[in-house]
Figure 1 (cartoon, rainbow, N blue to C red):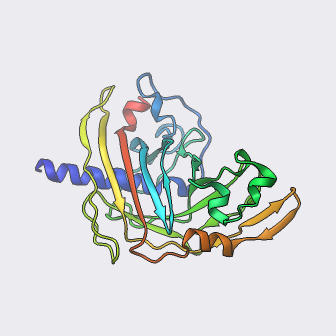
Figure 2 (figure 1 turned 135 degrees about the vertical axis):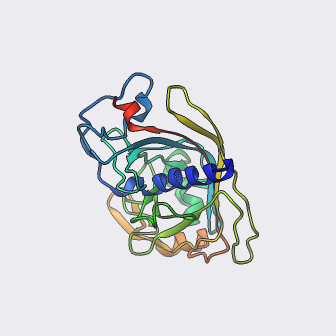
Length: 278
């Protein structure tokens, strides 16, 4: 098998593992990884927790951005995925120490930029109007060993002061944002133009058996984004006012395919579970 084929097969497996990770509930962790493999604590032991697990991995989205409609959110804080999978690239599971980390990313413009309500500044001040977006899975992904890597998500919009309540989302289980992430070149509908991802550089990891990938970029600019749902402006802690329409108007939602984009810089480590739990 040539080097290109090895790269392609490894990337398909790792990428599919990332996509499938968070659709399963975590299991209680009963065993600690060996020295040198502590970073794989989210991977279940094949001896005591899940006998079908053969491979452990840890993947981190280190940067990039997620743009839908008129809102472009930089990925400034790393998002980690940590789990294990079986020999066929399926049956993904993770311990209570693993899974998909829910990391709020700051949204430029804050609540005012989301709603257009400038008078909120006089009532609450700048700090109370900070807005965050957290990406969550919205359902099962596509075939685990296929590319593109189909990933249905929803974006949770939150505010430290609780001005948006707890249920303000773009996307849902019934109407997700369906990402199709690739390392190659996209073929989006207009007005978007093709963009290209980056294959990782593969090298030996910090301990025996670990393969490390760095410098990779996953891309998609062909997905559509639905309108907002569950967004309520909660004034003084008890007066809820539905603002789905305001959010959609200020954010350019719903936005059709060809008007959105995501680039995700990724690094990963992958290893046989027999090294992690010898």
